[in-house]
Length: 108
Length: 122
Image 1: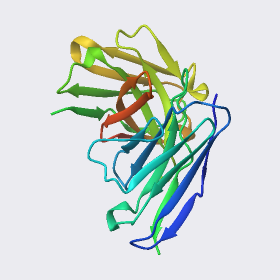
Image 2: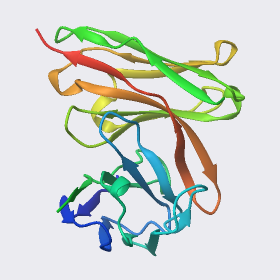
Image 3: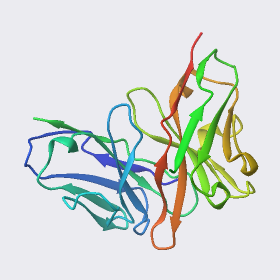
């Protein structure tokens, strides 16, 4: 099974800042990497699929890059509604489709 | 409106069993793979299992194989997760989700239910 290592586990930033979250896979997995945002008490929301494909309705300040084993999610010009927990997920080959451990983005 | 609604969660004693359900509406249920994802209180997401459109192919997280059974009833637009030999570490919110797939992106999950809490405790 592919293991996903996400970092950092938590992050403090201010409105207007730019932040980057990293996800590393235990083996090469092409671009089969998704990013989700989750707010307390809510289901996850898909932000990006295929490492860099922004979902409809997701603000352009969210961007994803990477392929192989190393992936990043960047949020530029943080807005108050962006403070949440973010997860990467690999969907390469056959399941299980593992998630990263999550990154909690908090207001500084 | 596309909707997934889970039910069946509750308090169960260790070693007990429970079946959680997912009722789908607003889309052609039989056309989609479906999946279960769980989240222990205060912790991260964990992919649990998925099932093909006709129920003929199922995949499981290694740690639940032999205890969890995923199934579906396309006539009832419903998916199920039978959980046996429950352990404290199975305590989680269980989410139902619709699996999308594209050849250039693999699988991803857009539509989610609100989740149902399963608590394993004596």
